[in-house]
Length: 328
Image 1: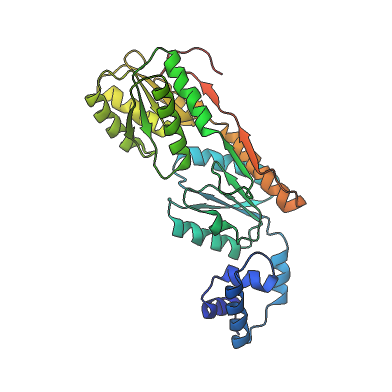
Image 2: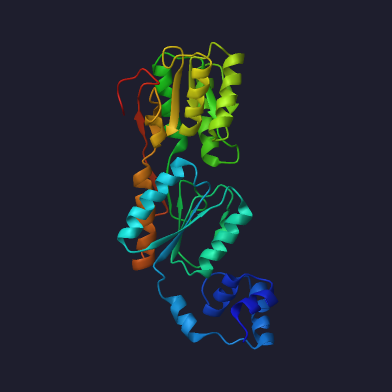
């Protein structure tokens, strides 16, 4: 008996592409469509009507693609999304891509093969061209892909300016920045805000690369403090790197905040689990996850077109690693 997988192999396409041709749903390039239809004719394939009927019904399952589930920021987003989807009796098909484009494409294909009703995507490598052929609702979380994809995020540039301004308000003029990966748009925006504000103030720009990794940032900050012992404050591009900066400072005998102020970004739980607790520009992680899940479910269950862009605001949380007393 010829199966849909046999057709996909003959046409040299994915099972999901064959499914889109059979169900006349989603975009398929005309050349690809002709090739699939040729394979169907050659193999005398007859679709299973029961399977096709099931395909058109809800699976009560959504896909969620994240870059790195070991990063507590993404883990907290997953928890927030699942709070909403579980209440709606949807199961979450969670995939961690490890920043690998080919792995992300395979995950998306598997999601389609398992007939997920919609997908929430956090990716630094996927482009619109990879998503436009999906014939299911998509919501982008924390990243922007295309104006046609509903997005839930914060304004990383403006919120980063607020974080740096807090250190300036504390009287610091020699502020160093720990950069995240250069290929991540959010990381680039936070670094650009730092550079722009420091240059506008006529202050030195001191930066090092922490790659959103605790150990990498710890080593990078150790080198930075050795080269620039008069550094007064460190602004880390995320909280994981801020913890790395704290470890480096403590190992070198720097007192925080007496000798060095440290500011993070994200608002993950780790910032409250270290001593001293770390000040941070806290993203509304729970609300971001809930908003994304609600937007996706609205599209799935009601066919409601989500707004193109939902921008939420972060909160400045001043703790023991800086001397400020007011949260705003």
